[in-house]
Image (cartoon, rainbow, N blue to C red):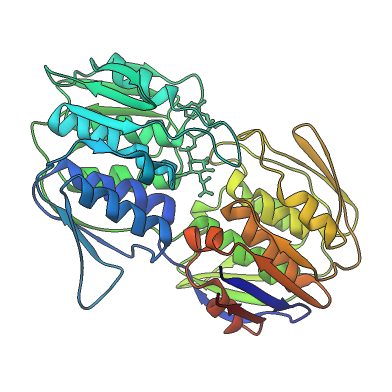
Length: 420
Ligand code: EPZ
């Protein structure tokens, strides 16, 4: 298994090109199942998760072809010949459940393995299933699988989410695009990745209004057609490299980074002493004077993203003063804390909150990651630490960050991947 070795203490400086957003690309790839024509997606990041999604689509019979000139451009389409999403793929990647809405909408049946829990929490899919049932699907759970059928097709419905769910909003948006009649999704998630999916569906002929808000109205159409769509730049990668610049006391130009997608991250980092200013092609990030402890609470967009919580905690670990970091989205997303404490951080977890007391410096250590964002937080800690850090289980990192070591090394970090 690959590892990452880094030696901290180098101020980063230079330019990093932000990749396409993993969490936008995955639902967009499943949107390719909604038409027999070709959906061409560009800026699809080269990651383990997008590779897995390609395998899942292929096993449904849908062709996924990579452009010969650009490996990040995929052409997706073709008839669905198999409606089962097997456990072996779904257990690797929970976003596999996003084939449910498209399968039901297109071929009126689906058998999708239940994703089960994962390292960061139990993560049920009840909101996906309830919404589809309201649209007329008959769903049974059998042998660890979701068996869903809509023999007479899906019908428009009014669905009020008890809380915003990114995945449920995406599944129901895709299902509603081909349903009979009007669907209203209220208290829907409004992450930039959802807006990106809406924009792509509209380009494919869907009728959606309220895009960018928590009330989406979808008027179903009989069929969708092919389109070309460019995946938005990854806001979590942008925020992660912003923390890298700040932690090392350097400055980075994040090409493609979008201020309008960062939500509460901009204000929180500004209060902590990190300046983020738009440029013609992206964002310039630099640390002003010292870093200060500032509280953060994770919330649905435009609140502070749970996917930035671990990285922000590293920043707070080397800031002056204390801060309270509260996780409200997932129940078990502090697994990076014991590893950060082994590197000299002073963090105490009390239920949903962690008190972070800033220290003058961290010290390198061998550490182990348990999920994607936790593993990149350990890389950030290694950049700030004195001495050598080895991050084990790099496969978590490869699920969601394109060539992290190459991007950081080009900006002056002492970092390398050790194969094997
Ligand atoms: C998406 O997961 C992202 N994944 C996650 O990113 C991200 O952390 C999360 O949204 C929150 O922003 C993708 O986009 C592929 P949710 P998702 O449904 O859709 C509860 C990463 O590191 N819930 O918005 O699964 C759920 O348990 C990953 O890239 C239900 O109770 O998240 C959670 O507490 C990790 N029932 C909350 O809602 C449901 O049916 C929000 O989850 C669905 C969700």
